[in-house]
Amino acid sequence: MAGLWLERELDSLSRFEGATEDELAARSFPALREAVEHVIAAAERLGGTGDPVVQQAASLLGLVPGVRIGDDGRVLEWHRDDLAEVEPHHRHVSHLGFLYPGEQATSPAEEAAAERSLLARGDEATGWSLVWKACLWARLGRPERVQALLELYLRPAEREGERDRSGLYRTGLYRTGLYPSLFSEHPPFRIDGNFGIVAALAECLVQSHRGEIALLPALPAAMADGTVRGLRARPGIAVDMTWSEGAVTVLALRALGPGALGVHRVRHGNCALEVELTDLAPVRVDLAALAA
Image (cartoon, rainbow, N blue to C red):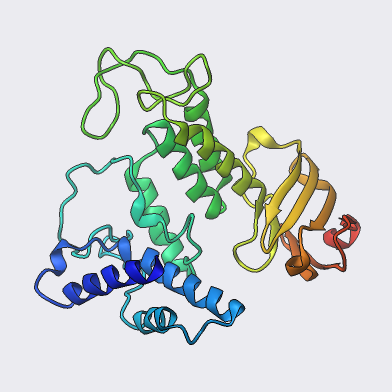
């Protein structure tokens, strides 16, 4: 499967260097780079770096452009910077996939460009788009933006207007929100919104994409107190946590397999400590040490 996919993308990169580059979406390249990096990393762990598909993947890395930022400070959605947007508030934000669910926002400049792009897109959208944006704002550590999107997501879907090209309603149909069944509105119902809100809330509570376990990195005001059990962190750790007024009061970590054993860095705000998992039993974390 990886070989077939890489063959297709090699053709795309070849065209990118030629006369048809205008056809290509800049948003595709970060996704391609991350996929290639994952293929290589998996091969290294499994001892398969000599496989021709893996070698082909490695040869792609030097060809794939990274995140590109336009003159207006936003992430480029298309490879040309002079293309005018037909729908500035379109519900899709595929060009920000490098930030979430990807892990490639490696510089303040890229994060700032993603923020500009989100602000330009606006909040109002279909249910699944609202929670996608909430995931992105959570990854950026902006709880107040997540809070605003949660309020839009949780409002009742009401008849308010005819849908325009941006996906919003103007006259006589449902406004984005939740149906009485609590299904997320598109319309009609789309499960993406109901599943996506869980991902967004999880991202507010725990993030682990930067090599450490960050606790409550984007906690909305509406979630100042709470408890969560079994939330997953990389590289396979279950997190049980209770918090009050935005501060962690109880924390336990449990390795879910041998690959998660070892020392892990845990961060809460500006404080951090290292926690060692020596077996698969839960480890209660000393929060006094975390606050020190």
